[in-house]
Length: 288
Figure 1 (spheres, rainbow, N blue to C red):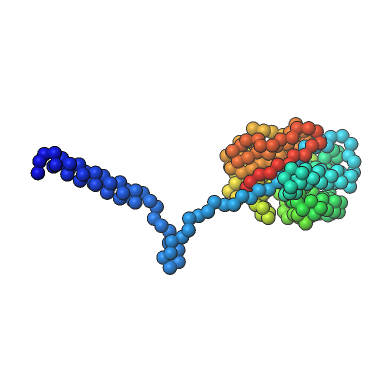
Figure 2: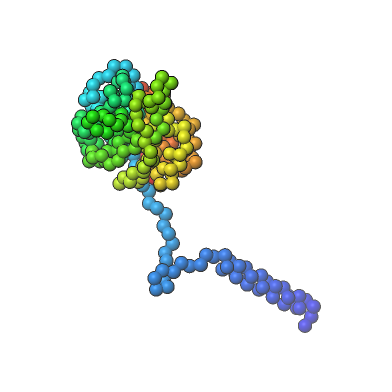
């Protein structure tokens, strides 16, 4: 065999060796097939289908004269109806959850917590529960709640009503605000102790209220419990704080406020919707 023929032979063998090495390497890098029952290969996991819902919120200042309980509840019910109407116009579907500002039921009243609190049963549940049924939506009702008829215990709460207007859960504000004038928290409110997450028909929802924004424990706990949307009723609107929590814990946050803005934050911390006009609603579709 001549020198050129020998070189061609060695080149061919080297090429074959490279092909064999590459082929075996690619095979080694492939993940092993997952086997199910009977040794059959499991199908590849599919991406979760879209879970699109429409979130509604409100910016509404309640400073000034108190109109009475029934009148206030009917005003709030009117805002819920407006959210439902705008959702149908914008998306062809109703609103799925309607958020109201902190102490929306009691806002504008003067007195200590016991004097301004109400039970859920009566006008609050009748009127706002009817709005939930009428719009087939969950409703977040923030209020100073008298836990019994004698008002021996008052909490600053978010009550979640389901689509049939029935109470589905209550979050009691953990970080109630202190006062320089007395030892009472928010005029006699008892702070909550837990950060519950509620299962709805579209996903898991948690709550924080106003001053809770200054403490990480609630936001972190909601994330650990799988919250996908956190509703934050407040009298003190903020942007940077909610952005930080949304990005850090990878959930949506919607604020409902008295002034400045009501906003919706996505899990990357971006503001994806906002209303700044007085007495205005926000309606936006998100994908959980």
